[in-house]
Amino acid sequence: MNYLNKKTIEDIDVRGKKVLVRCDFNVPLADGVIADDKRIRESIPTIRYLAEHDAAVILCSHLGRPKDEESKKACTLAPVAVRLSELMGRPVQFVPDVIGPQAQAAAKALKPGEILVIENVRFFKEETANDPAFAKALASLADIYVNDAFGTAHRAHASTAGVADYLPAVCGYLIQKEITIMGNALANPKRPFVAILGGAKVSDKIGVITNLLDKVDTLIIGGAMAYTFFKATGKHVGSSRYEEDKVELAGEILKKAKEKGVNFLLPHDNIAADAFSADANVRVFHHEDIEDGWMGLDIGPATQKLFADAIKGAGTVVWNGPMGVSEMAPFASGTIAVAKAIAESGAVSIIGGGDSAAAIERLGFADKMTHISTGGGASLEFLEGKILPGIACLNDK
Ligand code: ADP
Ligand code: MG
Image 1 (cartoon, rainbow, N blue to C red):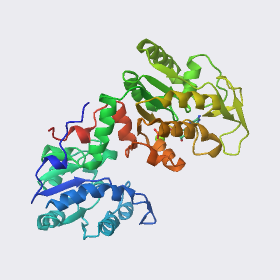
Image 2: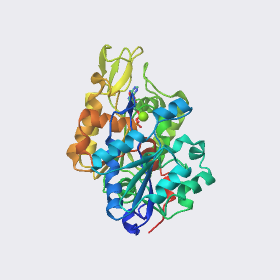
Image 3: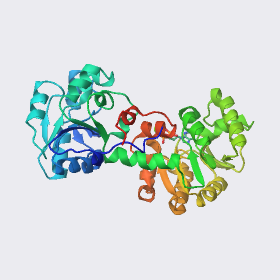
C-alpha cells in the first residue's frame, strides 16, 4: 500500500470552512489529571495551521475505554480542552456532546480561527462499530475532514474512517510525517536496509517479518523471539520463553530468508537468568544452547558486537521489539548496544512498536532516531504492508 500520494491540509483550501480534525487525545490520566500531555502538544501544529488559515476547527478524539456512565465521567475530554488552551495560549471551547443538538449548535456558531473540542467519540458504541448514520452525523458538523490520529489509523471507526465517506478528507502533519518517513523507507530504502526485530513473540511479528523479508538486505532477530528460531534449528533453549506452535513457521522463515539471499542474523550468545526477575542469578552462555533451569533474557556480548557491526554501514534501519527484557537493568544491555549502534550509524532510523518506543525513550536514545512512530499497533500494521483504513480513506493528490 502506497500512501505517499495522500492529500494533506496544505493541499486543500480551508479558509472559512469548518474542519473536523480526528486527533489522538488519548492521554494518560491519573485521578482525572493529565499525567502526560505529549499527545496534546504534538497535535498543535496541525490545529495551529488550520486556525491561522481561517478555518473553524472542530476537534474530536477518543479517550480511555468508557463503558458505563461512571467510567464516562473519567473519560471526558473537558480537561484536554483546558490543557490545549493553556498550551496554545488561546481560547479553546468545549461542548459535552458529540453529534447532538448542543454539538451541532456549537459547531454552527464557531467562527474562522476558533477552536472547539467535542466530547469523547467512544461515548457512542456506534463509533467503534463504524455506524454509517453516526459517521454521517459527525460529518454534518463540518465541511472538511482531517485525520491526524495515527495511533488509531489501523481501525475502521466512524471518526477515523467512516466520516471520510461524506467529506473531502486529508491528513494532518502527524499522519503525513508517519506515512512519508515509513512509506519512503519501505518503498525506496537507502541501502543497505537493515531490519531489527525482537520482543516477546514471533506470532506478533510474523506479518512484519514476512513483509520485510522481501525488502531488506539484513534481518536481525533478538528478544524472546530468537528462541523460537533456535528451536527450529535444533538448539536447546532451557527455560527461555518460546512458542512451540511457531517453531515450524520459524524454520520456514529461515528457509525463505536463505532463498531470498537475506543476511539473517540470530544471537550467538545469551544472557540468561534463573528466574524472571531483576535480582535473579545471571549467567552468560557463550553459545546458542541454554541449559535447563536458565532462561535467556538478553542477547550476549558477542551478539551485541555482531549486531552493532551489521548496523554500522546501514542506510536504513527499521527496528521493532527490544533485544531483551530491557525494562530490567541487568537485561537491557543488548537493547542499549543496538540503540547505540543505530545512533552512530547515520542511517535513516525508524522505531515502531509501543514497547520499543518506550524502551528507546527510557534509555535516552529518542533524539538520536530519525522517527519514533507514535502508533504502536498502527506502525506494526504499516510495516506489515497492511491497509490502514484511517489513511486509505483519505483523498489522493
Ligand atoms: P513492541 O511493543 O515494541 O512491539 P513487544 O511487545 O513485541 O514490543 O516486546 C516487548 C516485550 O518483550 C517486553 O515486555 C520484553 O520484556 C519482552 N522480551 C524481550 N526479550 C525477552 C526475553 N528474552 N524473554 C522474555 N521476554 C522478553
Ligand atoms: Mg508491545
